[in-house]
Image (tube, rainbow, N blue to C red; front, side, top):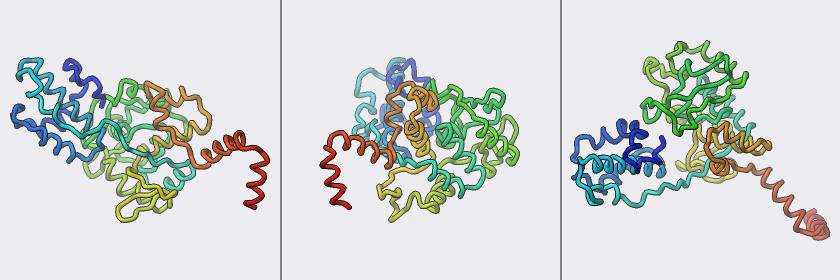
Length: 319
């Protein structure tokens, strides 16, 4: 969802999906002038999403009010837009991604059944967002062009047309190895027609994709725990280094892909294009150094700033 333009009522159509799936079910039967800021904030806090996403939904709702005012459906004036008085919800994420090495990813994959195995390979190799991967239908896989076309996303149990950003709609490269895995899964699933979802829910008769959150809780998290790359104590999740992990899921492997590519010295512009970002700024947000690389980088600096005689003396004392 791209809500950066919702302040302009003319661009409100960019946010139709959350309006239909979230705002209308909750607020559709209430008078706009009687909705209070406190009620809006309580509703946003009750959603099972992070604070930056709450902020986006708040922005959408504010855009609806501004649209109504511009159309003469509500009086002009800030006092008639309660969203302006919803405070304490930040657009800045405190999300610290869990990043895993290729070896750790292999350990997890070996413990996953189909189709979660193929789903994780798809996400880990392409950087697809889980909403994009779940929204894929077989007609989106362009076998002869070695590409995957992104046209729909599956968010909050609803299939939404479009992608998160304009660039997200671009086609994703599909290597021959990935194509072979997808063809293998297509040969196994009972939902293999062009209009079927790649990862259709059998419980729902293939009418919708599987639930990403359920796949994490039922398969991905248990596999990661069994592989020893995360552990859970008193309801908190920790990585191998003992650091707390606020959120663990398929998105962690989007961060991991970026970090692997940068660690291997890939051209930043190539990485940006693979992950479908408009700016290199996102690259620095998603790229995380691995411990070994951090040690090597720090060692290179120390060799430059600490005289050799001092290094030799310290090493001798350590021996």
